[in-house]
Length: 447
Image (cartoon, rainbow, N blue to C red):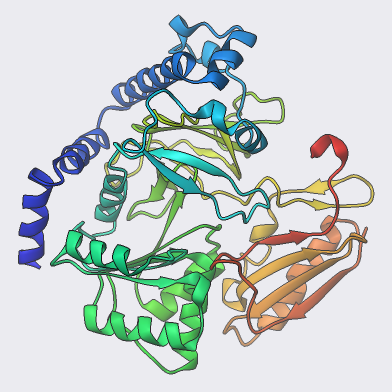
């Protein structure tokens, strides 16, 4: 890979010098003393908010309405006067978020997949070389930016895009499997490409990575062992991690990103929480009253993109639940940490009594991870629950699964019937598997 390394170095100092400089900055920031890092974050957060207040219709109106003092935004109390931004608001007032700096040259259209039921169309700042976030993250896993990579996700690249990628990254190779076009033929071709290319990293949606693992096992196929496997787009349960590690033969790392705001946090080699990219994003964990909760307490994840000046996203509720982890990581990276997100805020099991369970069920099989490969909760309109399970390799798996389901029945006081259904695989949309599917309508005040 010496040629690939040399080519990357030359490109990052010439044709892609903006990416190279940003990458160098990120590597420096990840080991800043915590006080300097948080001061940098506060300064950038205040800066993007002040810019949005003078350059977008939505924030100019909203900040004035809520009496936000633009001169004191470094103060946490003043920052919290900014109202939390909801997905529905971005959808309904989309043009109001477009800034005066948005042009065909500076803006890149982004779309969410709609797995939450509410797809969005927004813009990302094309001037920000965001891929450097991934390069920093890869290095935590022993993977370099110039290594061969394989990705499984919603790509939909055409011939021109594929050719452009090949030329841009030459002599490094990047191979793709479109999770929207999953079948034996496409997975077989992807397997052959992996054998030829020997990628250092295989990265993709959790559900799609599990399905490709099932394909390899069913067909009796193996792949050259990569240095790392990484997953995104859904919570990485311990069950799924162990399953993927067993098939791919390498450590599996979790990364947290979205279509609205791309890379936000990722595990390092310690895999004991995710480092927040606090130099370019601000993550807050808020309780039901909209105020920050103590470290270790689960709340709604709210994110600010500190760099997007064409379509500012400030205090945006991404729809996931999480908690802050207060510890210094032995890896030496000083970026603050969060625990693995615990599922979307819309993943709510509702009971006839009005009780709701919106986190924690993801870990129902944690005591016996070998018993289950992956599972899904389906709630019908009559409130009944169906837990769909793809069995694992534990010979006592069915016994452990039945015990776990019994605990769920106790947790809900047998308020609704729960059926256990064994399946060979779970359905997915665009490679993403929904953790919970509910037909129960939310009360009007929740809508």
